[in-house]
Amino acid sequence: MIGSVLRLTVLVGENDRWRHRPLSSEIVHRAHAAGLAGASVFRGVEGFGASSVVHTARLLSLAEDLPVAVVVVDEEERVRAFLPQLDELAVRGPVLLDRCEVYRWGGRKADPA
Image (cartoon, rainbow, N blue to C red; front, side, top):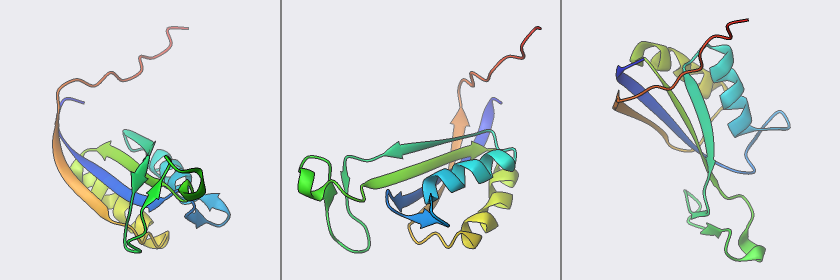
C-alpha cells in the first residue's frame, strides 16, 4: 500500500477499560477483525487530558493511568467505516484523523510453504 492513507489516533488512559479489558487492546482487536491494514499502541511517559492532572512515569507515586495512543492506518474509506466502533466503545479521549502519505510499506510476505 503506497500512496495516501488515513491515520486514526485515539488517545486514552492506560486504565480505561471495556468490559474488563484494556480499551486500547479492544480497539486493536476490533481494527484487526475489521481487516484494517495496521494498528499499534504506544504508551506515553507523561501527559494530561481533560482532568488536567499530569500523569508521569518519572515518579512512582504518579505512574498510574499513563496516556496511551492507539494508531490505526488504512485507506480513508476503511478507517471512516471503522469510526462507529469507537462510538460503541464510548471512547472519551480525543479521536484524531490525519491524511498521510505512505513512502514505504513493509507488509508481511506470504509464506512460500
